[in-house]
Length: 110
Image (cartoon, rainbow, N blue to C red; front, top):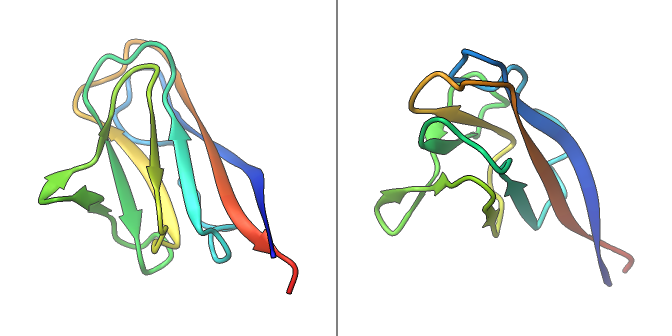
């Protein structure tokens, strides 16, 4: 079986907002890993949030007892990805629109 990478929809925090305008609620069912790449500038501390009920409720993604945050110009990989919806939230209103690139890795073949 081969491991492939695919682009998912971007996560965007609008200018003056703290939350993603539209969460990713599809395309995660076959994801073995999901990588979120932050833009080069951020106003607040950005936390990754995941949902296991299709995006009805979200929880902070954690690792080792700490919330998973992502800094400006950095990336975070969730492996394995056990969530069926993802979004990002900033601790303060962003000074401009912020676009996060999202990719998944998945297996193809037998």
